[in-house]
Image 1 (cartoon, rainbow, N blue to C red):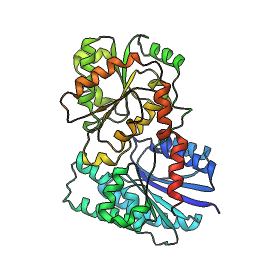
Image 2 (image 1 turned 180 degrees about the horizontal axis):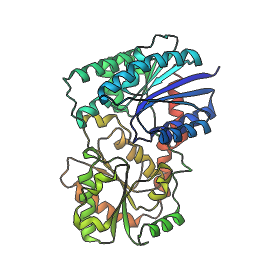
Image 3 (image 1 turned 90 degrees about the vertical axis):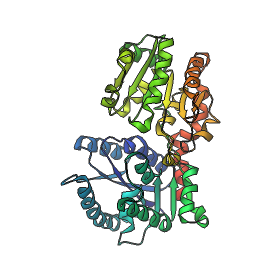
Image 4 (image 1 turned 45 degrees about the horizontal axis):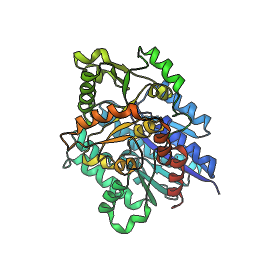
Length: 397
């Protein structure tokens, strides 16, 4: 019998998780078992972005609906209005489309699913990372505030109610188990953030042509960072490692790929500007530009909440065969990188870690092939392995 699964998510305009992560994973699952995926995305992205996602969903034969998150008269009031209108919409959609499993991702969808009138569905709760704790760590939310306490109650309620729960790290499971009790351990599963391995693949000929287009010499050593920018993403650490190497080797360059280029442009020291390239690119061009690099940064500030994340970009870098400097203490990264060669665990508590990272980058030229890195990464970051991890969770329902 075909399962009808409704994935519910609440996303800002700068994320590409839907087109870059979830839709490809759902498509891969659909190739292997009888699952009919539906997606409802609450978002304040513009119409062009929503249409792009819609077209990809259509190509994958996934039913996609976007619902506008109101931002007026304020973002808070607009969100609350959207939230409660969304509950009725979900009830009607589930009943009309014969949905058998609802799959809310993170906090706001959890609030809506907790209030559904239609009860004849199973719940697979995508608890994602530790999203509420992330707001405490990085967005100034007080753990004593009414907002946090309310949202935490909603999350805990759904952890109890859900038939199965998925997280992005084993550490997140351990934290959630302390919240709801050890006896619920069997409902938890870790899922992988997989990528299309034919899309994220090293290409030496493309590497040379794109370097030429960027004004880079074949002999330049290029660091790359791809993703969001902000204090939690290790800007100071990255620029310090880059600067130390650049002062010793002026042929060192830094390519920054981000949807928020202004953050970088406002913070690059004047003496480094000529050696730094900042670009904002669409998702489908990411592998092309990663091909340019010799070493990647996957730096995150190792706060409490970061135990729950699985950095998506880490998988992209490793599938591209890139030696990577990655923060220690982020999700299950430490355990994964024990099995992936030519990577450096950046210990934020070690005063010597900057110099060690620079030394690591200086040794990269001795690596003969990217295939060793890529082959080890396939076990954790391929689309196939990701789909298998989701299938394991679905089988618990």
